[in-house]
Image 1 (cartoon, rainbow, N blue to C red):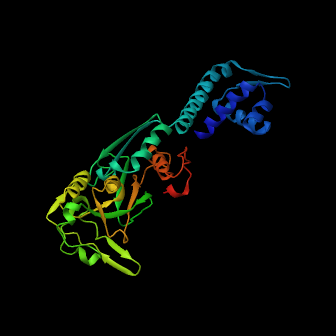
Image 2: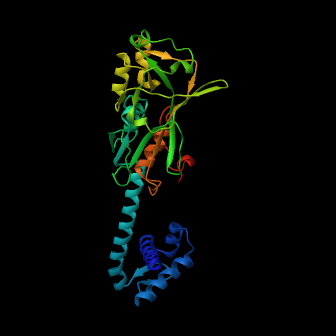
Image 3: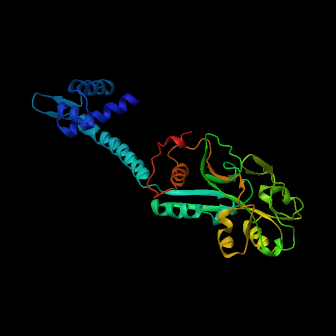
Amino acid sequence: MLDELRQIAIFAKTVDHGSFRGAAQALRLSPSVVSHHISQLEEKLGVALIYRSTRRLALTREGEQFLKSAHAMVEAVETGLSGLHNKVESPSGQVTITLPSLLSGSELMTLIAELRVIYPKVRIELKFTDEKRNLIKDGYDLAISMSSKRRLASNRLSLFSSRRCIVASDVYLLQRRPISSPTDLEGHDWIEFAPTRYIPPSRIRQGSQEFSLLMQGNLSVNDAVALRNLAKKGAGLALVPEFLVVDDLAEGLLRPILADWEIEPLDVYAEWPANSPKTSLARLLVVGLKNKTGTLSQPSLDQSDITA
């Protein structure tokens, strides 16, 4: 079948160019190869399609009838290829992304807004939830997650890391003993962020000293905004990404605790279905998000860091 399709296409191009030589130049073949393919097609059809002469080509009656079908086939293929090319040049469609509510106040929102300018025909649907979702079962094209430990597979890509800090309000700190080292954290009240409950304890370090942060308390929330607001009201200590409290710290509504100690950052990464093609919209957006520094430009899908 493939041989016949190729021969039909060569026949149509030969007629369009008026000679074997003209078709050969357009198709980057030799005139003898063009002639051979048409002869093979005539043999399979059992009819002559072209009268051959030294000056010009002329169609037989059967050739004229068959040319209409040949042109229709070539036009259909060229239209399909053109459509695919335009889709790559100007992507369109919808991408449904699941991501934690904590990221609603992060730089990720700026990046997604910039992607909307780059890809105006792509509809991006963001669904915030702190529950883990199954990409295939729940019908998501892309998942963006956060973790203090990198667990990257071939269908995952780290986007950026976010620094974390321990914060509390003056209302809380004035009631409790001062905190000058990680050992002073023992006995303090923590506001637990429920979605991170099963993540291994975070580490805090300074030089050669390293401690685990054991955050125990009687208050647990599953919403990042509530976590910040409770900390501002004096409910306890909170371990949060810096982007969540940067304004509160600047205004003095929250105070940094052990600011000269380093806490493991949160890694923000994207995950797509393992069988997702390289040209999928989801993977196209992942590359765009990865190029977060500087001006985002139309990325190449051949970038090595997204090849699965």
